Image (cartoon, rainbow, N blue to C red; front, side):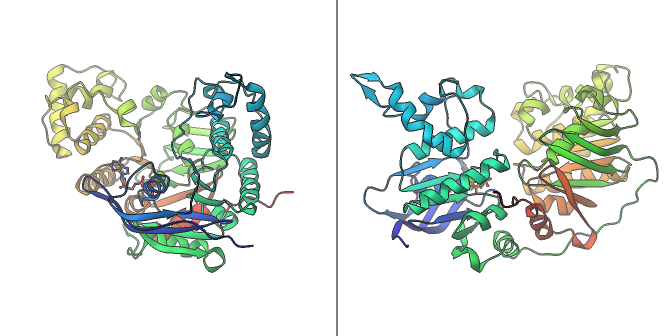
Length: 491
Ligand SMILES: Nc1ncnc2c1ncn2[C@@H]1O[C@H](COP(=O)(O)OP(=O)(O)OP(=O)(O)O)[C@@H](O)[C@H]1O
Ligand SMILES: [Mg+2]
């Protein structure tokens, strides 16, 4: 059975300041179909979704939809009220009333079958903030379903969901499309696309790279090619001397419940090792283990010859420098000067020196570091006044000051410009050349191919592959990250 068009968008343009988020994108959504929307980070997917749902106005272009098309959107950032109950969150606008009072009975009668369909087993009176993240996500989906939309838009709905919940979601979507509803489904999980979707649209740099093709006409490698475009496939070759000492980072059979399963790898001195995976694949948990931020349930860990670090402080004592992705929270004291920030770790006596040096000595050291990093700003400048890229250099400088033997980087160049990015990469190379063991995660696959000697690929908590040498390209990584993501058929 086929249904007609529910929504057609054409020639959409949207700029944020100088950034063209959409540059002539369009999409055609038909009733009775799940239409997947895929593309790299920043390709414009959420911007398109916001325009289709009316939350954002396009600079140019048209969106036409069938009369009385009700659209319900589950957005990428959860929009529930954490201190309201599940029941209150499910009926935000027009809750059923009886004699002027909220009709709890009616709410619950409406909500229960939807929650049951999704497999959400939560008390309707629970505050949403107390639910695990996956259940919050299901609550958000339930709320959208209760609006009985003709078009349901899901922006990365499965990033927090366990496999069983994804299976249930798939069944729910099947039921909906069976009733003629259109579903737009945004995801990074390409295996999921192949299971869920009748059609796929690929966005690249705000444009349509593949327009609503039928699932049968594409496969995962072709989708990856459309997402990446014609970027050069040449791997970056380098030769780096690896020091033949006991490796500073050793994980052997390490498990963390629900996160990592039997993970084994080493990072040797002089080596830059990357970890890659889709959201929730476990690669970031591996970094956390090395930094002493996660307890393990099985396996053996040795960091800097001191066993398993029990805290970040412990890890720092073992020689670890950790550059986090959330710099605002962990990386910097933005109201302090450059010299205070760059020398904070060694100043606390946490660095390998052990002694607290004099202030003059610290400023001197800071100056030295900022010159090495070509920082725009002097040691007495307050960090808050530096540009984002220069702030990031201060984070680096802070850790260089400790002369780390082990460097752990989580998305070190997110949001910095190409010049700073190149300098960071040069520094990473220098650290390795100086004998550090470097472990890096990045949402930017090009970054991994540029700085790493080899990259460990994680899928659902396990290392499923290692890519190095001539095979280390974005494309190979992107395809490897998808493998094994699909669930075995259930039932
Ligand atoms: N409110 C905003 N202000 C400025 N720039 C923005 C804003 N929202 C998005 N952008 C920029 O527009 C581009 C497209 O962003 P968008 O959120 O649509 O991407 P996406 O495909 O959803 O990415 P992701 O997979 O990371 O969710 C990016 O370059 C982003 O930085
Ligand atoms: Mg998005």
